[in-house]
Image 1 (cartoon, rainbow, N blue to C red):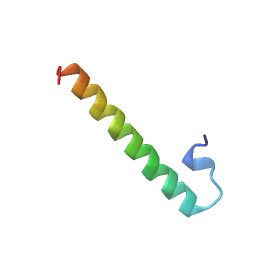
Image 2: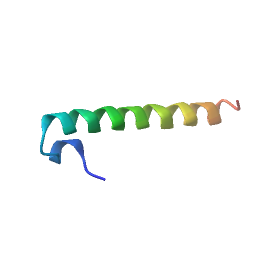
Image 3: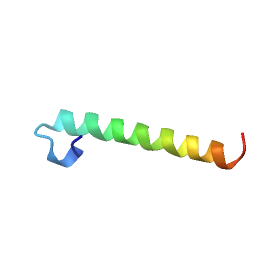
Image 4: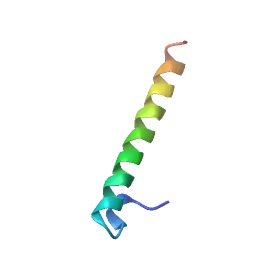
Length: 38
């Protein structure tokens, strides 16, 4: 695992940021689904 800001190229930073954002959105959706009893 590496944070996007320590990656060496801009493309890798962008790819990492997109991946991190997708993961955060998925985790949030899962948490909301659990808390709503669905």
